[in-house]
Amino acid sequence: MDGLTTVVTGGTRGIGRQVARAFAEKGANVALCGRDTDAVDATVADIEDAGGNVVGLRTDVRDEFDVERLVETAARFGNDGIDVVVANAGIYHGTPGETPLTEEAYAAFDDTVRTNCRGVFSTIRESLPHLTDTARIVVPTGGIGHKTMDGYGSYAVSKAGAEALVRGFSAEIDQPVIGLDPGVVATEMMGEDGRDPEAVAELFVWAVTEAEDVNGEIVGLKQWRQVTR
Image 1 (cartoon, helix red, strand yellow):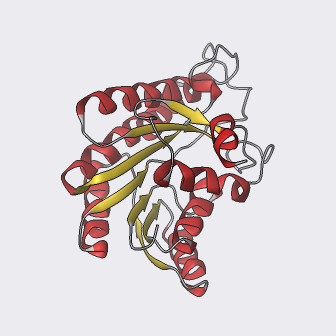
Image 2 (cartoon, rainbow, N blue to C red):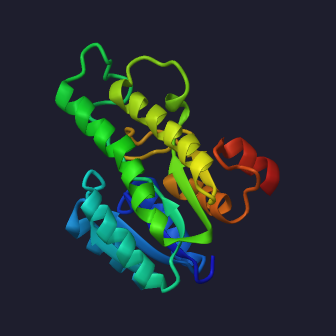
C-alpha cells in the first residue's frame, strides 16, 4: 500500500481504528475521521508515533458537507487523489440482539439509518470526484445485512441498505465496490464479543490490494482464508 491515499470513516475505534493503523503500517497515507475530536487527535497521535503518515478530521457522516471536507482533505494529502475508501462509520442504539423493530423508537431508527446507510452513501458519493482509476471502495457489513434474524432492528435494516449501495454503485462506477463481512468482531458497539479488531484488519488490506473479481460482491473471512493459506 506504499504511497496509496486512503480514507477510513469511523477510524477512531474498533475495526476502523485497527484498519487505519494497518494501512499506515503498510505505507499508506491515511485520512481518518470520527465524531469525537479528542478521539481523532488521540488516534492520529498513536499512528504518528508508530511512524505512520496520517491526518484526522472531526467528521459526522450524517452531514455530507463534513464528508466533502474530509475527502477533499484526503485528496490533497496524497496529491494524486484517493485510492481507497473504507466507509466504516456506524452506530448501534441499544444492546445487540435486544432491539426488535416492533419496539424501536423512531429517533433511534432514523439516526441508525442516517449514519449506517446514508453515511455510506455520502462517503462514496463525495469521494467520486477524487477517486483514482484504480481505486477501491470497501463497505463493512455482516450476516445481519442479508440474513433473517430477530432483535437487531434498524441496525439490520441499515446494513441491508449498505449492501444495496454496494451493488448499486458497483453497477454505475468503474472502480470496484466491495462489501466486506469480517464476522463477529469484539467492538464496543457490538458488546465486545467476537474476534479482536486487530485480527481482521489484514482482511481489509487484502480486500483493497489483492482480492479479485469482487466488484459488487459481499466477501469475508472464508474467501480471504482460501487465498491466503
